[in-house]
Length: 149
Image (cartoon, rainbow, N blue to C red; front, side):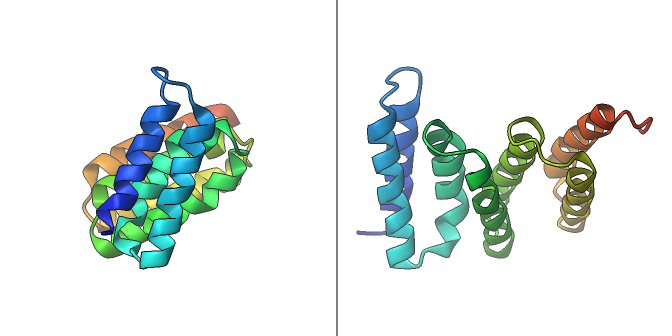
């Protein structure tokens, strides 16, 4: 078994949870298998891909959304460290979208976290990340009633 198997299990789980199938119990099981494989193999470099799929597309049907916030943040850091910028961006976008619209996070604190992540995106020259988080930051300002653009 190689570390790609964990990605395959998480992809299969996301497919099971899709509107084509709506088999959430089986999807949740496949997600757990994927996470167990990552843990057993110590494959931190694939953590961003597996977490984006499991916590962003599978567990949202079975667990409270707040439970996935720390996992998306962890995967963002792992993605930056291991050079998986595509899924680092996906995880932090999931994080902030869930925090703002699904979990009722404090808007002021969310705004501060967004600013820190935008600075990191600038530091790593990730224009897509900066644009995505900039949109979420503007939505946060709008929700707070702050006149900032």
